[in-house]
Image 1 (cartoon, rainbow, N blue to C red):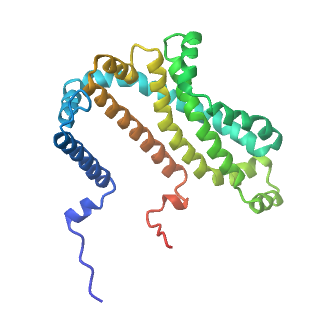
Image 2 (image 1 turned 120 degrees about the vertical axis):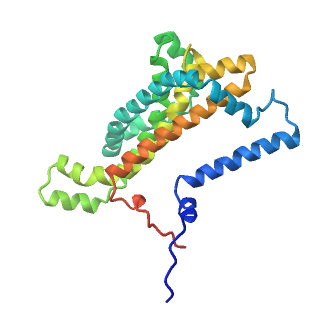
Image 3 (image 1 turned 120 degrees about the horizontal axis):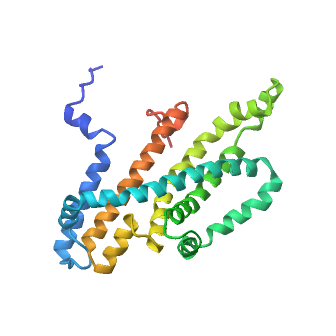
Length: 269
């Protein structure tokens, strides 16, 4: 058999995990610019990529300063979602009685639009950071609970019986069997939750705030400053990607043994 030739530097770079989404992003930006030029879309409807990049370059310090309140509210809301969501999921998965009482109410709560009840948080807690944190928590809470419940319920009963037969206590069985088996599903919910928490924080800033990316967007809409609004959307997208990446890195550190973390997974039909 002929020896395989080593990959060139260009081929290695193109096969890198980070370069592919970057190339696709460049394609989207180019298509965006061409669509504006071909269809002659006015700037008051859709700004050109050049205008958005100019705003990002000139107003970057202000946008970065406004992103801190949004980031803080997002992280706090997400942390509360994990802190309360996982224990509640454990109770729901471990007790049919708790599930019959609590689970339907959780599903019912998701039918209520958060933008409709966000003004109540402003009335109750003022214009501080608390309404934003609550909005982020409410949007990020449900995915954590649903994913964690699914993970805990999918534990193989035979493995639990084997651990109990080896004289393991309930806590030992939980730490050795239930929790490791449920962690992949829990992290799936956490990755969804962290991106929804960004949306929740912005919803809270829309309702009542004098700082944050949501406030910048609301102000830009009022003045028809679309380049600034699109620049704020870019900041929000970057925030969501960074937080998702952090959770994904934590997942790789916590469950490196899971099949989803292997780089040589082959999908066969």
